[in-house]
Image (cartoon, rainbow, N blue to C red; front, side, top):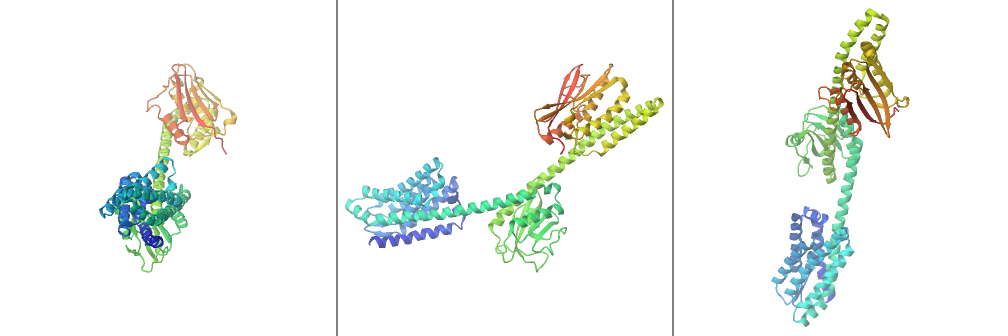
Length: 561
């Protein structure tokens, strides 16, 4: 058999390899090849796959001068490149032992050379891995060079081991060029197909990630308003526009919340769930996919519905299914794998946003509850003392009593109108002024007040009810316990980019770490500031027993507007 004929025969075998490689791209077997095998199960898949290739290469080989010209080396070389030295060695050993079992004067030489080729390719894998050049393994030109080197090594081993040498030399002269050329070219083409699959997978993954990120970006904050028909309609519209599917629906556990796209004339939001597939997804907490081929989809509402396939993904929150997101395609459109994986990604994004919305809602409710608690702390105690003071003042100085009533009315009005938001320092100080006016009327000369805050800081933004509880504590736990006149001072400092507001009294009776019951108002103020601005902000209390107590409020500098 001349060289040209042998090249043609081996090329036919190589073509079989490539056809098998193409078929593998349609199965999960290709995954370890595309991702590079690092775990034992993946290595086992490579071992079995390429061992079969080695054995097939031998069986389909051409009898030539008492030996077999074949493409067995491709399996050993590719297994080493993709799986490393251990995988390459065992695939080569398996292929070599099979060749040895067939006999012939080159049986031992071929067994050793096939094992060596697998090990050599695996060592090249190891070298490129250690030099952080793994992507080079998928370069067809580099694979061609590695395979060519391995085949040259095989020819050398045949000359070194096979006897008689004259026959070995004659054989190498016949098979060297065909086997080196075809095996090297076949390995390069095989790896090129795997590289194309990697590129396609990366593009699909990139497309999926880009769409998921776009949907996440556009939907941020929407579900903070609750999981209802209004918010889900906006979310469904975003998913519909970004995924380009035929229709999008969102449900809770009982009813359809939103539907956008083909079929919106009979899929009406607010109606109970009628789809058995949706109820199955909710009940079993799993993805349900009706592609219209392997599993039929039939609209449960209208026989004329154009939708032909559906992907139903549960929305999960707090370890339970709270609803579903559903993607639909028309009967004449294919439901792509991208739609499937993207649908699962969208469900995870929405589930996280629903949980975040619930957290924000609970946090808001907690803040409102805390503010109501502050209201309850201030109003009864303060109002009782204020009314007693008014009763006493009315008898002596009616005009002052009228002024105090106006201050009390202003204080209570502001107290009732304030929500959970933020106010300026000027507004907070005005609220405190009306409070202190009434307290000064109660204590008379026994209470002196000084407010020394830089005018330039009056536009500072701070949470409502930040200073008032501190001033109340300074009086209630401080100056009211003194026999001599009490002094309350409110002043400010700047510390680089931070603002310090200090409430100070001259009693020194309030501990650095008050009991929970005594310091409830301060704890609430501190927690609100930390939740809003971070743990580095909030309150710090300093007490010098019998001398002074100071409460420092640290806030970031942030002016109104």
